[in-house]
Image 1 (cartoon, one colour):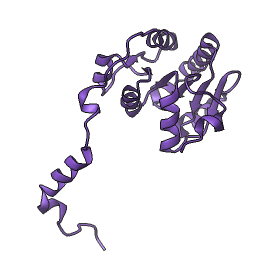
Image 2 (tube, helix red, strand yellow; image 1 turned 45 degrees about the vertical axis):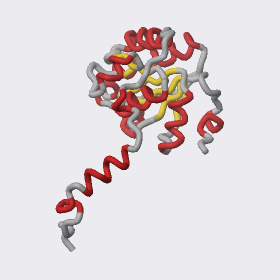
Image 3 (tube, helix red, strand yellow; image 1 turned 180 degrees about the horizontal axis):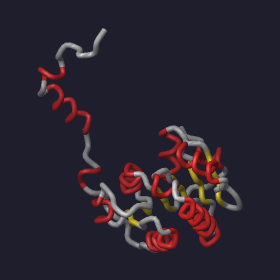
Image 4 (cartoon, rainbow, N blue to C red; image 1 turned 120 degrees about the vertical axis):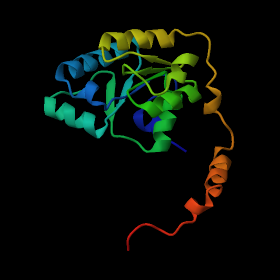
Length: 189
């Protein structure tokens, strides 16, 4: 059972969760400065804490550029284990991220998501309405957060996201290729 909300001192549905790690978002000093300002503005505009998971790349860039993300109602924390991070996603008001996997998870959990990128490998999340692409412009990030939070009708995850018994299918596929599954090890001694 996750204690992530308690540890971070937040209530379910009363915070935004942020993960940023891609070079186009954290390696460009001016852009990172504007992101920091945008996150503080989101915290002020929506009256909720903005929790930022500090990916090692992001931490390194903040240190290299002499910037601090935390302050006011913007809080940072070290990356969490899977179960704690998933709990934070499930209970967030909104999630902002440049991660591909987070888009899928938010879609399944019914949590609005803003993807801070120009493209996505998960277009189905855009099609069902769980996700918006903001690009790297912090002003557009703020506009997309307002848009996803104003949605009234919940979405249904794409059918391929809610397939039952996936592990059974994987076992059948592996066993269907016995010559591959049971071949002698190719790892040198």
